Length: 437
Ligand SMILES: CC(=O)N[C@H]1[C@@H](OP(=O)(O)OP(=O)(O)OC[C@H]2O[C@@H](n3ccc(=O)[nH]c3=O)[C@H](O)[C@@H]2O)O[C@H](CO)[C@@H](O)[C@@H]1O
Ligand SMILES: C=C(OP(=O)(O)O)C(=O)O
Image (cartoon, rainbow, N blue to C red; front, side):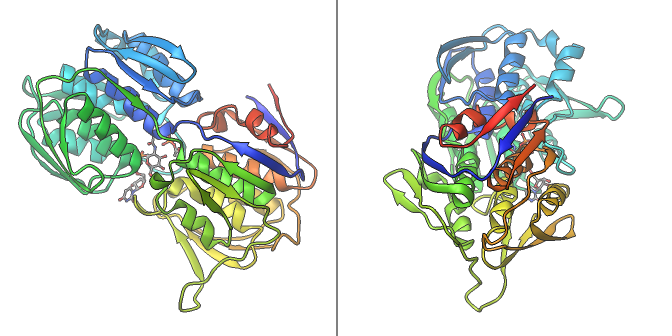
C-alpha cells in the first residue's frame, strides 16, 4: 500500500493538461472486442484501471501494439474465450468497474460472457440490473451465482435480436453495454432513458466510424440498426472532465493562477457552472480555463434568496463524481451549501476526515451534507488519512495541500485508479507531495 506525504500550505501556479478520460477509455477499449480489425485509440490515460483492463484483454488474446504514450492499437482477431473461466480472469475483473463493459461486446460477437461482480469504488450498492435487463430484451438469458458473485449470460439464438428497451435508470455503463450488444444484433433496437454523457456519445461516434448505424447520439433516445460486422477505426479519447473539475478545485483552494489546458469546454456541461455557484471565478480562454488566485469566494444563493443546494443527477446534470471535490472546496468558501448525493449511499462518509481537519460539515444522513465555509479564515489541520475511493482520495489530497503542516494519505492506489502521475503533475505546479511505498 503506497502513501502520499503532503506538505501543505504552498501555492500552486502554472499550466496543467488533463489526461484522457478514464470512463470513456474503459468503454472504447472494450468496444475494440467488437471487430477483428485493428482499432487505434489515442489519449489513453495511463492509470491503474485502464492498465488493468488492457492487461485483461491481452490475456484474452487481444493483440495490443503501443504506438507511443497513450496511443495503442487493439486487434481482437483471435480470442481465447476459455480464459473467461479461469480464476485469474475472475479475480482480475473484480479489480475494476470497467470490466463489466466487456459483457456487451462479447455477447454480441460470441454469444456469451462470464461476468464476475465488477470492482470499482465501494460507494454504495452498484447493481447491474439495467445491463442484464437490456441484454435479456435483446434475447439473452442470464443466471447469477450468489456464492461466487458471478453472472453468466448467453444469447438464446445465434444472433441477438433488436427490441424496444426502456431503461429503469440512465445507467452509464449499462447504456454503453447495451449499445455495444445492439450494434451487431438483428434489426432495430431503441434504447429510451439512455445515459447521454459525452463518454457515451464518444463511444457511439466511434462505433459509427466502425460501421454501426446509431441515431439520436447525445439524446436519451437511441435507435440502433444492427449490422453484420464492424471494421477498424481510429479514435481519440476526450480530456477527463472529472480531472478538470478536480484541478478547478485545487486552483480555488491553493492556486495562484492556474491554467487548465485543452479542456474540450463544450463537453464539460454544467461542471464549470457548479464551481461558479460556489463563487469560484474562472475565465474561458480559447479551449483553456484560467482560474485566478481566489482570496475569497462566496457561495451564491438561489434567485429567491434561499439556501444553495448542489445535487448530482444523470447527464446533463451534475456528475456525482465531482461532489467530493466540491465539498472540500466549499469548506473554505464564504457561506453555506447543502450537498445532496442522490445516486450513491456511501460516498459522503469521507467527510468525517474533513471534519477532523477542521472543516465545518454536518452529515445529515448518508446522502446529504451541509458545509459551512470558513471563508479562508481558518486553515485546515494536517492529518493522517486513508483514501476510501478515487474521488474522496483526490478531495483529501486537495484538503491536505491547503492544510497547515504535513499530512499523510494511505492507500493512494485508490487515487492511482483514476489520476495519472498526480503527484509529479501537481509538484510541477509547486505542490510538495512525495510517494512512500
Ligand atoms: C466506469 C464508469 O463509467 N463509472 C461511472 C459510471 O458508473 P456506473 O455505470 O456503474 O453507474 P450507473 O450510471 O449505473 O449508476 C450510478 C448510481 O446512480 C444511480 N442512478 C443512476 C441513474 C439514474 O437515473 N438514477 C440513479 O439513481 C444508480 O442506481 C447507481 O447507484 O457512472 C457513474 C454515475 O455517473 C459514475 O459515478 C462512475 O464513475
Ligand atoms: C466511481 C468512479 O469510478 P468506478 O465506477 O470505476 O468505480 C469514479 O470514477 O468516480
